[in-house]
Image 1 (cartoon, helix red, strand yellow):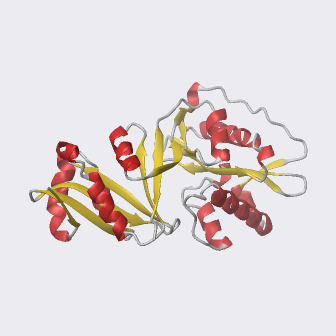
Image 2 (spheres, one colour):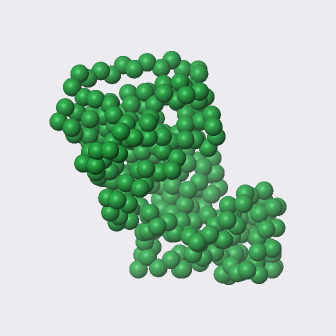
Image 3 (tube, helix red, strand yellow):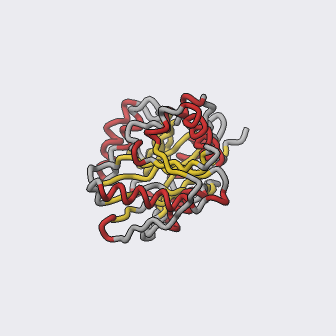
Length: 296
């Protein structure tokens, strides 16, 4: 018989043992100890912790409760997951319950589907070795110009136009998981993230001083890697500009001595798809996001 109860401090040692025996990473404990944590429930069989489900919130996407769970490999045949999900669903008052897993995690995906979770997005995170590809700039436009995010900071009107376009495109591509209402100033802080490389985050501006396209670049997790960030266009008819901007960023990165460039490309974003399909990335595994709506 499976007994499910609210996780408490007294369960910490049992959770540490569960994580160790199943070679799980430290992210479970980190979530429970974070400010974002909302609740966790443990599944017990004969007083042994055999499963855990953790819920947390993200202020940027306030409509969802995010979920991470782990079932002891020795007890998966007992179908423990539905008990945990049912308890968490009862705890969540409104909105969505959301979880992401690798496409190779077939058992987990089956469990989610059996618990009425629907796939809403696929994210690809490939890495490209810059030294092994030929980089050529093939786009030309005599009326437009490329500027950088760093240069735009000194032009408030143009900067505000860019920030509003970034906000509009992000909200449009995240309808399934709505974004919090924020001011233009708050969005500008997101654009000017600590790891942004402003001198290589390129913006295409036309002859009327209208922003047509943008592609941001960030410092990667190690000193040999840069990472593509948000990208987008004002009009989908102009989406061909994006691979051009990205190629310029790869050339710049290689000139700076970087070996790799990576990124996260969501299936819900036509802009990210354009880069993932047009640049010479190798096919990479998909990170699947599933969602279930909490019904009143």
